[in-house]
Amino acid sequence: MNTKDLREKSVEELNAALDEQQLNQFRLRMAKATGQLGKTHEVQLARKAIARIKTLLTEKQGNGQ
Image (tube, rainbow, N blue to C red):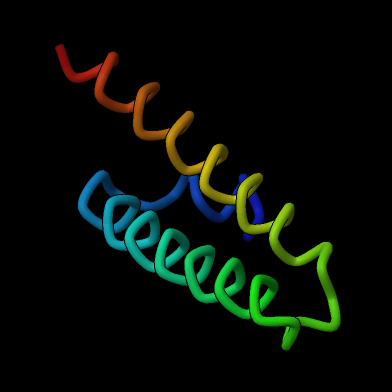
């Protein structure tokens, strides 16, 4: 996910994207734990995507107050 694309989304859309990324991260962690994940770097990419979304949520909620 690109930060530029995320900035254009509303808070509700960001929350939905956050839920989706957290579910994806969980699936990746389970696959890694069972030895089924070949591309282990995807776990780190998911973590970074979650961090980007949370940062943007904090920025947007700060501007609304």
